[in-house]
Picture (tube, rainbow, N blue to C red):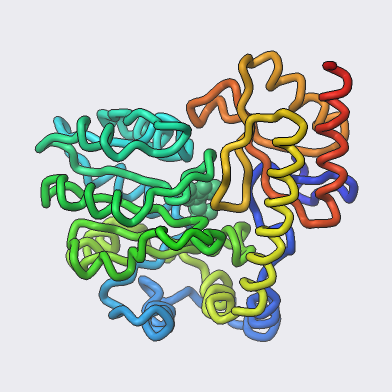
Length: 343
Ligand SMILES: Cc1ncc(COP(=O)(O)O)c(C=O)c1O
């Protein structure tokens, strides 16, 4: 689709923040982007120090990347030797499996349990040759979480030589109290790696910036394999401001929670099978692919763009980003139209 989203199209296919970018990030970029003739700092040294102050971790434990996909690329490409393996859930963020395929990495798929990530299945698949386990928490596309007790159980069971990646791209949308305090767990488990991005709630997907927090030996490895200057100066300016934009984060969180509960309630009333979500998207699954496609076609006719989840591992479901409250009723009306056509 054209970069410039046409006015009447409601784009709910990529889990972006529909309120736009963080206003503080936008202002900082407008005021400070006159140095773009200069290269950015190697390995984002100053930005790491700012994140360090904000997060309360040492800057040597932070790796800044051009979006989480860069971190995932580095790890999947370089951390797993021939004969070693990667474990990912059966239904999860498509990039993990795409990268594993490109780099010819042996990949084991753990089973899902009620559309959630099943830690027992990961443990069953794990052996001395498992180098990397990736858990999206919340999981994309199902919106479920792995609670802290399960993450601890996993960390206590896997070999110390196995890296466990907690990809927390959507963690700012979570409201469950049993969600892991991963920052704290990092002090206990030197093989745990936490990923965070500015692409989702901060509204900076187009700029490509995120970060990892982990033991300094892992950070050193990530920086060793990172190509020079992948994180742009403009993205760094925006991220430094966005991380302090509490007002915008609060507004985005609240609106998402409200619109999500309306949408989940209405869809369930209409008979759709919805997985309760801890994120900014909802997963809707069907008995047949035909039925799923019928709903997606209807939404597309009404200019509502959603994401079918075939490539994520389920060809009978789709994922819809929670719209802004003013678009909620349009989406509900489109979905109820399908129901009435069917009955
Ligand atoms: C679970 C998960 N991780 C990572 C990403 C990619 O993040 P980034 O834009 O920082 O590369 C996404 C994007 O949809 C995602 O869903």
